[in-house]
Amino acid sequence: MSSRFSRAGHVLRLTAATGLVAGSLAIGVAPVGAAAPPLTITADQPAAVPTGHNWNFNDFFPRSLTVHTGQTIQFVIEGFHTATLLPKGMSAAADMLTSGLPVADANDTTANPGGQTHSQIRVPALLPTSMTCGAPTKPCSFTGAGVVSSGVFMGAGAPPPFVVTINAPVGIYAFHCRVHPGMSATIRVVPGTVPATTPLALASSVKHQIAADVKDAFLAEAQGSVVSSSTLPDGHTLWMVNVGASSAGHHVAIQEFLPGTLTVSPGDLVLWNSPATNEVHTVTFPSDLHTDQVALCDDPTTGTDTPAPPLHTPPQGPLDFACGTHPEIGRAHV
Image (tube, rainbow, N blue to C red; front, side):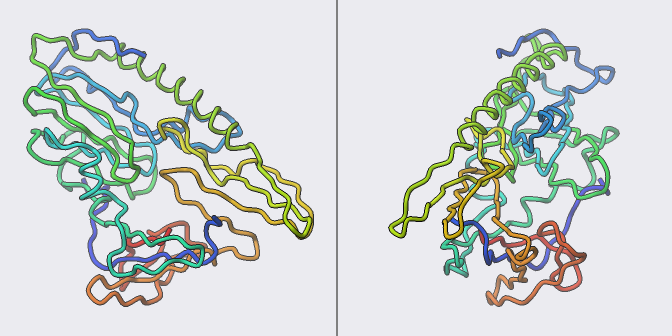
């Protein structure tokens, strides 16, 4: 698909300068064949975020699906995610370890000023396994023998669905997002004599899953908003607050400072904790804007770092920098 991203080359390093301070699925018989519309698995649910909240759903809806061999499904990817189907016997954790987005930086073991170790971003994790399939008119074929991945959509506007025909033999197959550890689900391929998931059953499952995720997110937001404090030897107060949080199971990322407002006195200290497992945050004051991360191009052979110029100002992420003549994804020190 020409609208999907494919690129290789240099690596971009981001070094933090000020950074972080411290339901039951009902089953029925689904028709199989060209006339049957594909079942839809959705990654993320921005429309389900309650008004006034800044959340991301690092979740697939539904997390399990039963299909017949030869059935076509589609992934609707609403955020910065991949839909990566894995061969039989391979777990999401195993694929994340060898091919996921984050990996330890092998040629830079120093620490950031905040004490954080360095991580690197694998470029291939964000790329589709094929540029010639995945459209409704030409689905990718998943045989269960190799990885089939959507990659991360890099085009303008709403991403097109990623369409896959399940040609794998009977068995259970994992799929996951290579960006967010723990964001995984399963596809169960059954014989034609066994009922498969119907659209009605899928819709019911998604409804209950969203309700459970939202409930967990409200609880995580409330727990994360609790402020701890202690008195320092000089009489001032040390305040401990959170930047971001994760719901139980890490299915929802709370992209908020918790609490939203904190009243302190001159001389007090504020310690920001970042308990979210799948998100990277900074604590940046207006005077430090655009200085909390320093982008560098990293040569994987020599380990040499050179400045990476932004493609536009202000940059919004790793894709907004260039190494050489092309925008690149690379290494993030977090």
